[in-house]
Length: 172
Image: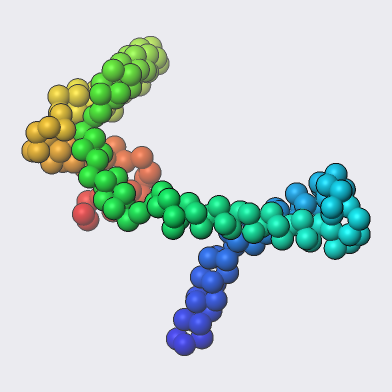
């Protein structure tokens, strides 16, 4: 077990450092492509691209430090704002204005094709009923969010997107 834990830790370290390595190699390739254009670095010979890459990497790291620590563009409190999105479970105004009419037209066309082909249309009717019930919910009413989650789970239990998903939804 200790070996497995050690290997997993090493794999985690490699994954974490991958972004910095890709930045370094990208900067090195950029420096190699353009070092001949910059007079200061073209006279350095083989050391020129590495010096140019070191300066570019330092600029990127300073900009990252300013972004993260000085200007505080990212903060854990912003994650809470994202999680408290009232439209995560109920339709947003954009959904009502744009997506639901589009879904309705697509469902109508699919149903017409299915009827011409003699295919069973119960799944299409279930989807239409699901979108109709979802359309009635608003984020301002707290119980509508719970109702939207219930409707979603009920619909996905009958019509899962993936065949094996039906069993996992029944367990939850």
